[in-house]
Image 1 (cartoon, rainbow, N blue to C red):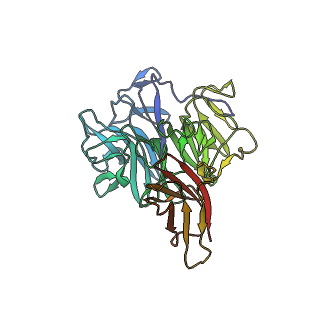
Image 2 (image 1 turned 90 degrees about the vertical axis):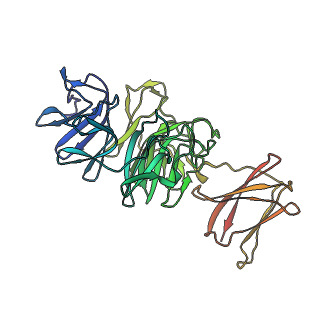
Image 3 (image 1 turned 60 degrees about the vertical axis):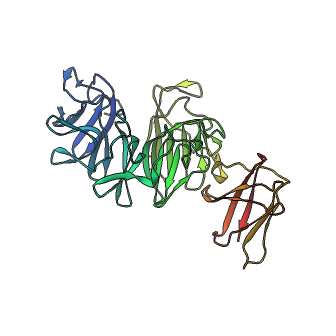
Length: 394
């Protein structure tokens, strides 16, 4: 009260999630008691000024993760469907009990019990993510009828996982630990447009231009027209961004010229003040696990092209035909072998990826169906040469 921290209870182990639902506060975690009172299970509810044991408590070491969507409260993980009968999946709170939602496919191995970390509503369908290894797919699933099915094929990297979900500008964003080098579309973050997955430029990296080194996205939230991302990374779209970054729908931006030394576990806003939770220092100062951003504005350090790098080359020539009835690119390469061509639009979204065999060192590409705008083109040939430049489609 009056600007002073107070406690709602002293728990004997950690809390993993907290959710307010109606006039009740639910908490889950690895605890088995509060205020020196043993309350078996890892799920408690606070109402009438007292902590109460949930009748369908979970015995998982981390508890079930709690999430609210609108007026609905969900539990992700272990919970009882009836006395003495446990399940692992998604539960919806109704009439004082948890009711299972959907059926997950069987795990792909005896040790493949799922860890479900987040749930989101996208285009009227529930989507979940986590470390979910099943015989049908991995890590990100959408509820279709009574079944959870992999969304867009799920993640493909052998040790990839999803950690959080957010809806931003009409698309679904998936953050977690994923690698382009392992075959996933994005680097620790991906965007689903309702039909397919897209990268956010070069994504979030712990080492610049290293797509094989995993980082993580731990938390995402939308504030003031931007998507704020927290986790374990050092670069966002090629610009320095330690642990916290902003995505405005077309480019990555940093928050401050320096940031947390360790993983940002979660972030939030109190009015317009950004707060983060982590264990470490910022610019050499120990923060005590929580810090707030107090500068008047965020740093104006943003990466055009969502972090893709523009290289210099005198060996590649581009020409856009001036005749508007023949929208075509023509470029030359020193190689006569196969050349891989990737084209990104101004938001960093890949709009084309194909392999061509040059004829007399020349490749012609029809761009008649491209929207007007600025694009970036990347070429890689069998000689190991990589070239990048830009062009304008009028």
